[in-house]
Image 1 (cartoon, rainbow, N blue to C red):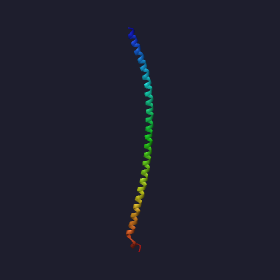
Image 2 (image 1 turned 135 degrees about the vertical axis):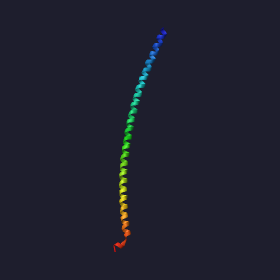
Image 3 (image 1 turned 45 degrees about the vertical axis):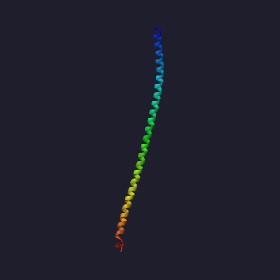
Image 4 (image 1 turned 90 degrees about the horizontal axis):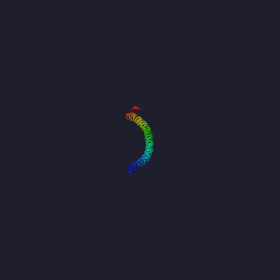
Length: 94
């Protein structure tokens, strides 16, 4: 019966050692989880900043395109008016 007690004590010591290892591993995993969560937040903020920058750039580009289109439409109207005046020719001026 003495060997059974020794076996039980040995198993209890092994279990206690295993618990310490598990607690250590648990703390390591919690720290790793916290680092990963912080990294996720950083990356989400970076994505949001990039999206905002791209949206602002897109709006600026759209404004430029609209201004250029309006300019070209005005030029077209001016050229059509000039062409019409040239086609009427000098006969109306005489």
